[in-house]
Image (cartoon, rainbow, N blue to C red):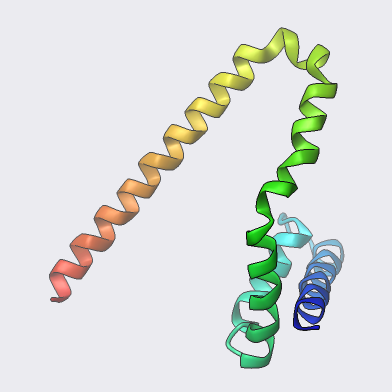
Amino acid sequence: MQALIGFTLLLLFQVFGEALSRALPLQLPGPVIGLLLLWPALSNTWILQHVRAVAEFLLANLSLLFVPVGVGVIIHLDVLGPIWWQVGLILLLSTLLGLVVTVAVLVGLFRREGDDG
């Protein structure tokens, strides 16, 4: 029951974010706004408890969420055929960029921790 309430909460925050995105001249997608609204709401233990239950369920079954994407790629191989190298290059560069940013953030955090200690 907790997971169902948590899932409902996540959907409500997404709907609120979508409504704000459409009502206000914001250049952010509704789900991002909903996530930003959810973040401070997680300080409420009731919300945190229910969202944690659904998050644990979703993370335990995360691999299943990639099946539709994989099927979509296989179905549209004829479209991806001519541009496979561009998609591969973008995947490689974005992965490397993510690694570099992660390392930079960790180095900055370790330096800051060293200054405090």
